[in-house]
Amino acid sequence: MNSLSEATLQAAQLVAGGDPKLVQIVLLSLRVSLTAVLLACVIGLPFGAAIAVSRFAGRRAVIVVLNALMGLPPVVVGLVVYLLLSRAGPLGSFGLLFTPTAMVIAQTILIVPIVAALSRQVVEDAWQEYREQLKSLGESRFGSVATLLWDLRFSLVTIVLAGFGRAAAEVGAVIIVGGNIDGVTRVMTTAIALETSKGDLPLALGLGMILLTIVLALNAAAYIVKETAQQRYG
Image (cartoon, rainbow, N blue to C red; front, side, top):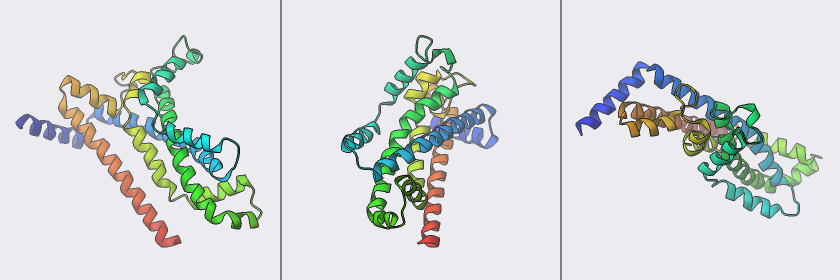
């Protein structure tokens, strides 16, 4: 009990004192995760919305596959990206393995299905309600997608947060393609795993505190934005 309380106290001191090693890990984690979320949204939101407003052969199969991909095993994604980026792989000449870019690629692959599947459901519900109005206004499919995405922008915040939560909590894929190299590819989750195995509980707890605080802060911000938007725009 004493060791736990001491570790917690030391962790709080590391966080409050802005330990350079801790700050470096946190900043890299945010850079990687936010970049992956941005890319996933650029790909996933239009893709999910396009599926929602389109009718084509095999649509149900696409939806089933998309929903299934939400549960992609991170270690499998990490392995596939590793093979693609390794020297013997087709993208090995770019030298991206064991870099933050490789971690962004792996996280993006994991997040895109989540963003696409959830946005499809949200946009499809809205499409059923506003389809006739949009058609009467002469909106094309592309125009309808853009209109619905803009109209649902506050509802889509929760989807973006779901993607960020997946990215921020990821361990398996990023440790495979990033290598958990100190000062280069070590992020909060991989550092927590490493420091815990080494017995350095203060640093692990400090990073855990920061990760939890970030997630809580983002969810609180999303809730406030959504509530404010509903009060202002109805």
